[in-house]
Length: 268
Image (cartoon, rainbow, N blue to C red; front, side):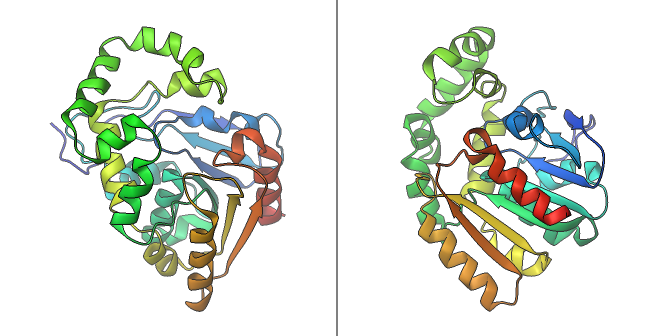
């Protein structure tokens, strides 16, 4: 049995494409590497590396893992070449910042999309609770969240097949992969990474230049929160910039050219 927080015995499932400078892509809660498909199919000039995070997609799902920040970073770090640009979305943006703080030699620059810039744990709980019934039940610690999740896991093939008919605002491949998690991986990542962990100390410690990309209609994280964080980082001496662009929380899906332009600016 592996120790909670330890690197998994099997490596993460990973997509690789292109040639050139390494760019790492970290998806958000409940997604997979295929969240970045629109970026992958429309970009050139770099070597893309996109893992399924531990417990999600086709990566290992150890039931006894802690799924906290240290646990996820232990699984991600072996995949990251030195001097990489790291792109993170939402929960993956929090992990990208933590990776840069713990492994400075691996991260040259950060591009954080839809960063959950909640100032306190209470703000995070309130924001997550507004995302939908399942997220609200999970963050509130309701037993019904576990019952619902484990029921869906028990009928996973059916959930994967029917998911795109229920969630219509995302590409089917992303929705299908959204059913490939477990209750421990989802609930512990939500609590330990999204709710409990604040990214700003990591960004200050890392000192890597950071570009924050945020949609004007992002309902998961108000753009004002990210603007405040950007100012605080700049006051702390971090090379931080923010690009507020039309769109919602899923810029990489609906406006991949924004992500690609940010990458090209960093590696150019």
